Length: 161
Image 1 (cartoon, helix red, strand yellow):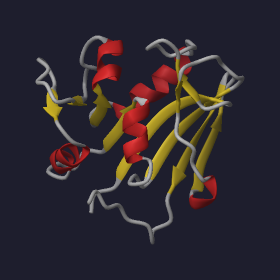
Image 2: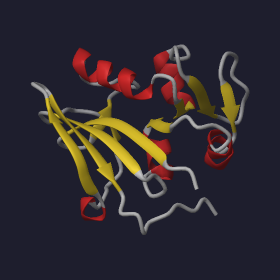
Image 3: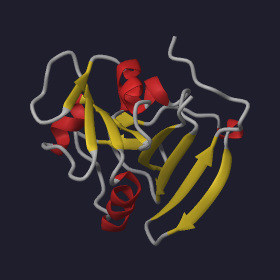
Image 4: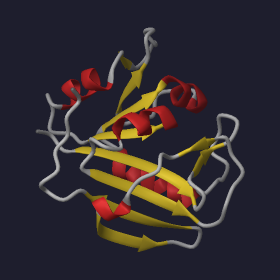
């Protein structure tokens, strides 16, 4: 089975959004997101796509939606997106929003989490996760956030059924 990836930035209180936008602007974190996802496949929900406003360049953009969206690959389900990813050697990253994270946090084998310093007001949260189920593979400190690459122990595998 293909390894699946999740990438997210969240505040210490798990906030990931406020009013359809990211409640912080950290260029270094955006650059890291770009570096990790370029030349790979990114999967997002319709609301996330609409908040970005366009396909992200140098990546295959898949949007989970019941309606076709011009300029991107549209899939009705996570399983359909994963099947597309399994046909390539590129990494498949789930990039949000909250609904997509809720559906995928238990099936991914890697999480790249940017823990943004501070607590932010917001209306969209990353799901509760048991970090004891994960291993810190890499931790990088930045001025405004810490990026941790978590891996799931090899005995875990995903099931979309």
